[in-house]
Image 1 (cartoon, rainbow, N blue to C red):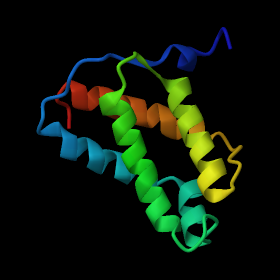
Image 2: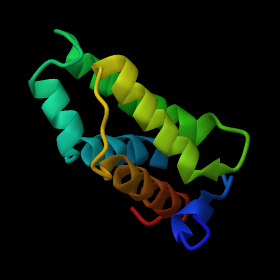
Image 3: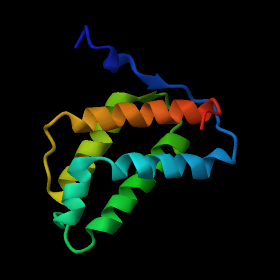
Length: 118
């Protein structure tokens, strides 16, 4: 992975202004709503009858990861969070590269919110 710039993607630990929290939550929910793998899992109830609630919990977990982590944020950790959630909550292995894409988009979204670009 030496030539992969993704491996170096991190998010600084600046604190976002308080009013951005709701914007960040909305942005996370919007990105997840556009993720075909997750939407298929919800529609087909791969996580059971409470698949929609599990997807909402995923959005909440991502928000918490961004806002409560004390360490520097790395895209690989977010990829692991997404992968584990899809596997444990939806019994689904996503191997189409979309986890990495969504993780990268979420990291960019977080950085934009930290800098007031929302």
